[in-house]
Length: 208
View (spheres, rainbow, N blue to C red):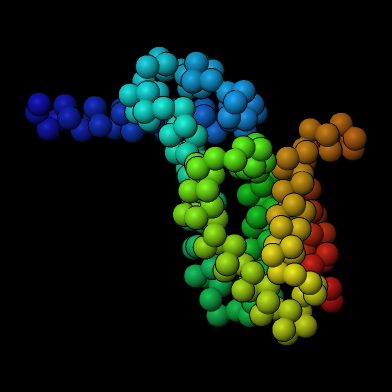
């Protein structure tokens, strides 16, 4: 096949995979693994169902690819942010990372919905995700928490529990945004709401 024809075909294949992954993230987040079907995902992506098996092999492998895709979106931005913040102390880094997490949760509530659904299943895919993506991030943040605590700049307590409390506080409006809007009449993803939530969450863990 001439090179001029091969490249567009490769690009189309990549674009198809990206559409399938985006649809899979949304459907798995909404319905969980057991409630989702490849037919629903194909319909959301606007592709024929056999293309899912062609590109990903099985529903299980598609779930893992979708999980890695959404986590990598967050972790890549997080890594860049950590490098940029290298000269700051642990408490200052954690505050900014926490604010970033609030913003990401507001823009991508599907990440946390996806992980909540994933935790309902005891499977090898989740174990693989924990080892490859979540454990390095968890270890780093717990280390930062311990250092900030040693400086007296952060709430005392078990670093692992504080880490998960931070995630829960940061992700609340992202996962319960519709409920928040019904109760308050304010959209949870408005910039001013996200900014106020980031400030509130930060003050919970970093008492002045």
